[in-house]
Length: 224
Ligand code: ADP
Ligand code: ADP
Image (cartoon, rainbow, N blue to C red):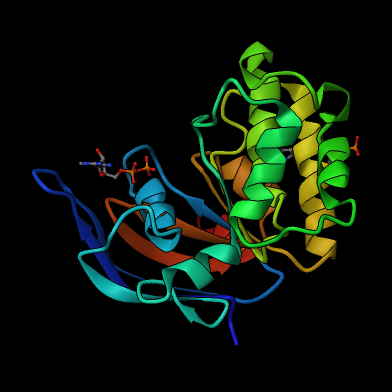
């Protein structure tokens, strides 16, 4: 069964625009899918709905076999989300923040996973630092570590390289490759065609709330 199915999902914000118009999307386990579209196209809205942060106006969603709109908690446990903005308690240490994130999604015994994630993101040396004292780039790394702490099956990266320096880009790229080898499914949003092409197996193009097509990247690039 697919890790994600989205059927007829629409969203009209209160006093706002229709951000999504009957979106259908199926993602198989282990795929890397890029959602490509300009600012305002509806990418963040779609991710936020799948992650249970925003309620859709209509439609249905399953994540790892769970009804994401009904059994939200079970669906959410399968998901890791790397948002664009940092919303962490700034006064906690890196290690406490990432460990808490793991427990939040129902995993306690660690087995060295949190340490591994922190090492992969070059955060281990900074594990006792308070988030507020970190550089912007280091804060972005904490966001990624938080999302990976509970070993999600489906990882969302919202504009992963926006405002990110070269060394974090390289670490992120290596991480994406290693996660895929472990079978993690990854969905990222971007407004750069090059990023979609380099990182993804398939690309979905979103424009004005409509998911226009989802194709193998080679087929798509020939069309654009
Ligand atoms: P993208 O991530 O592709 O830039 P968004 O999903 O953020 O697009 O936005 C899609 C549309 O919905 C935009 O017109 C945006 O202004 C609008 N929008 C996003 N969030 C809200 C909100 N909370 N309330 C009202 N309108 C919103
Ligand atoms: P190498 O291991 O050869 O030094 P990298 O691991 O940094 O190279 O990157 C491998 C490939 O991925 C290169 O083609 C590089 O341009 C591309 N790449 C690296 N980071 C990103 C990124 N954030 N988005 C898209 N492509 C990237």
